[in-house]
Amino acid sequence: MNEAVFVVGAGPAGISSAYYLEQAGIPYRVVDRAEVIASTWANLYPSLRLNTAGFVSHLPGQRIPLRSGIYPMGRDFHSYILDYMRHHSFNIELGVEVRRVAPDGDQWLVETSRDTGRYPYVIIASGRFGNPYLPRIPGGETFSGRYIHSRDFTDPNDFAGQRVLVVGNGPSGVDIAAALTPVARQPVLLAIRSDMVIARQYPYGLPTAAWVLLAGRLPKRWRKAFLNRVNYQTYSDLGDLDLPLAPNRDDRIGTSAPARGRDLIDAVRAGTIKAVSGLSWLEGRCAVLMDGSQHEVDTVIMCTGYRPVLDYLDIDYETDKEGWLVRSDPRGTEIAGYPGLFLVGRYYRGLGPLHNIRNEARVTVDAIAARLRGEQQGKLKLPEPLE
Image (tube, rainbow, N blue to C red; front, top):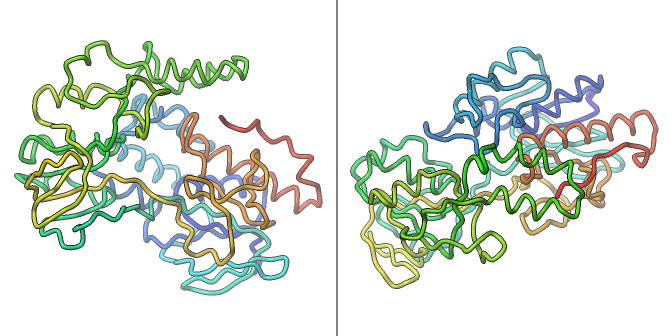
């Protein structure tokens, strides 16, 4: 086996890792269990739009075309990925499932559906969108209607005329509820467990990414307060809105990531979306909510997030509160206690995952290159830890 690095996943994290490995001249192999590149982005509902700015969300070495706008549509981003791949000849194998990654002396044993090999370095780039999180809802397994995760929502027309309950008021939940309003029976019910924040898509006239970049020039002690003030700027006309709004981001308890823009506001006012209490249990075709109210529904769509795809790892590892592997250095990407095992695609805050993926891939490849040259990792000029 000639490859020094084995990369799990051919989404943006795996592609970015391949780019920097090519630049460094390090032999590698990328595999993905899907049959298409960036499979998550290949199977999207039509109205999905990036909630991070395109000018910071590109892959290394090629920006997203300006015609895609500040916040590109998901399908435009997938087209961009396909165009990106036409300009590169990465060593990527599709339709290959990784079944086991385990330490083997000073190397890593990797078992796939195609073969078995040993590698000095492994990069985990499998992300989390292949592992949807479905909390246990009593009655969910016997619910007589449709009960799906948001990952399986691809076409609003599949729910034409149906009574739909969307569970979860994060960006995906709000987006899916809004996408359903032209075709589903109105109102679409949006279940909100505690409260929520509605923030402007362009706070003070600029996209949030621009404010994050500007905040980087401020003293570190001021950044968090500044970004909370700017990025969570809300609207002044929400007083009559029938939504459980959090007073502000700092006071919220259990609130999801903010819903951005006026789509939800306008839909609630128009009566096409109705905010309801969180889901307690399901019975027949009935959804029983936390406030005791009951609603007959045909479909429940659970917008309850994802967990990292790590089922192939045959090691004892520690995770943080979001389920990601704990790193040995907060500035780096190597996994604590497991030299040679790296994670790309973990960090979702700041300028967003697609921006951070580039940074993590570069840091990872720099560390591997230094090891291959026999240098100490401590000599690397790693970036400052992200807030």
